[in-house]
Length: 49
Picture 1 (tube, rainbow, N blue to C red):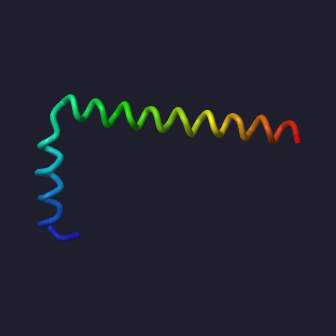
Picture 2: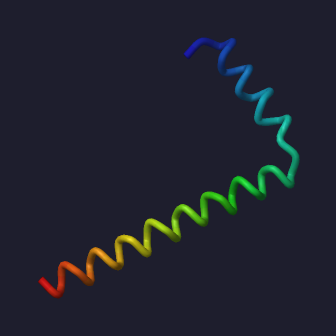
């Protein structure tokens, strides 16, 4: 990765407002919850079989 791209990413991340950052974190939490629910269901199915 070139320094120009890295600088662009830093500048882009600094443009995010606190509200945007919070929404991104909440979105990640939702994804983690969905993955854990799916994993739990798969474990239950595996135990039955």
